[in-house]
Image (tube, rainbow, N blue to C red; front, side):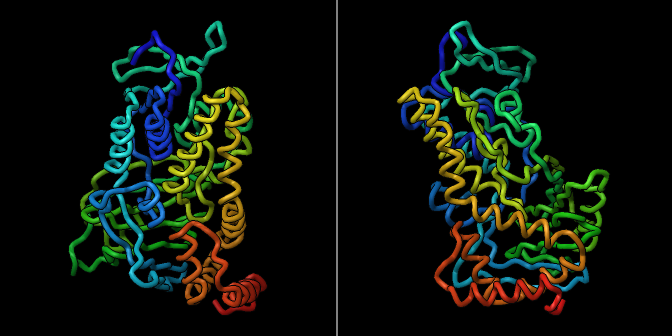
Length: 397
């Protein structure tokens, strides 16, 4: 990196959001510095929908498994299978390889990479943003930028130092263990082409637990916002219940997952945050890869417009465009999480709803294509009345 020049943009964070933003800006010819601390992988089930693969040109070799169904498990151990319609599938990736490929793509487009940790933001005498960082060797450096794009994850330091309200966003703590996938016939409750989701209070009192296959490896994890709840203990119990206690553990990872988007993503001057730093993780499901990459793309486009016009109001377009497209879905999922995840009795009813063919079809359509499905008004009406029945306790658990 060059301390004696002013970059167009410094992107802090090399995950899906930051690497995508750096790629978008570099391919437009911008002078981009991509800052990534390295050596840490976010706990993540690794599911990506077809729309992400298509929109962001993800190569086939990064897809470690193709999931054809999901199994939803209730507190009473009732199991509901949700097959994907037709030839559809959900791609499963290993974040270690997936994230690095995104960073390499950004570098190939012209972004300059540096492995270091973000320390703080300051201002030069002329008001230009100065990013202070520390390399792995402990060397303190600083670089100037016309714009700073923060994609440094949940509890983002860039957001905390620049965006009002960023220090008050609620989080779910997530923890998972990457294990060796069991061989067929091992006796494990496991299918290499199926994601298993457990709605059981003893595994998570307010979220869910999962077993997601990645080909040779599998993610076994849990999330909860309850202080004092043992995430490691829950994963240990889940591994035992799923017949995965005896398989080898490859690595263990933990991190917070934000529960709702920030009300502002920029400082109305020259700093913008995206991805987990902006809180764009889907409530109820915890899905974040697609939304992170979309946020990175929208953030890159907003920063480009800011650099062209000099108008800081352009930065707010990133959040405005994202919420216009996905705000309603986030609102619905937030309500669902607060209600259905609040007790095992409600979780049992929720799993019962998941057995409904209309619910399954519309759920998969919304997930795969990232939009509310409007093509079946009669089905929506049926789901509404079934849902109302369960809300009022009239449906059978």
